[in-house]
Length: 147
Image 1: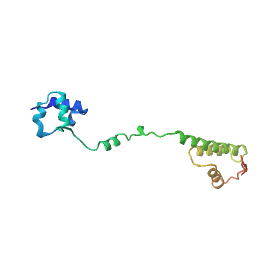
Image 2 (image 1 turned 30 degrees about the vertical axis):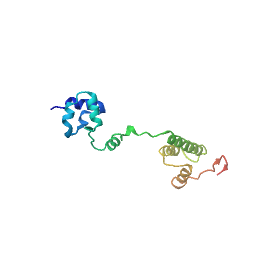
Image 3 (image 1 turned 30 degrees about the horizontal axis):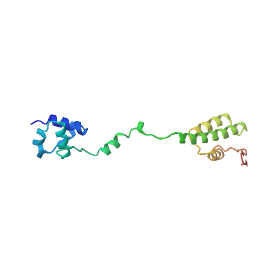
């Protein structure tokens, strides 16, 4: 008693693969007599034909979509913050160079350090200049007066 046709029909009706179709072994005679789609769908409603449940599909799905290409993160916000910070730092470093507080080599070094993210803000850059490079900084004129 081969149930190949019934298995194929049940899989098509349920929208799953043939290997996922499970027959109730107590109702095999009824299933073997079912020839039409209507007979098979009636047996599905009567729970004589079921889906085979294998494993936790949710966990498998989560594991499947974990590649680096599927990470969707907005870069715009981080980039705009970086741009605002780097422009301030570069402007300040250029100002120091124009006032002859630092040399050309030091200017290049500080620009590279700023680009690599060594300084969170201008204050950290000033701190680095006074402690590590032991430079005397000129007064900086800000929008709100001298600092």
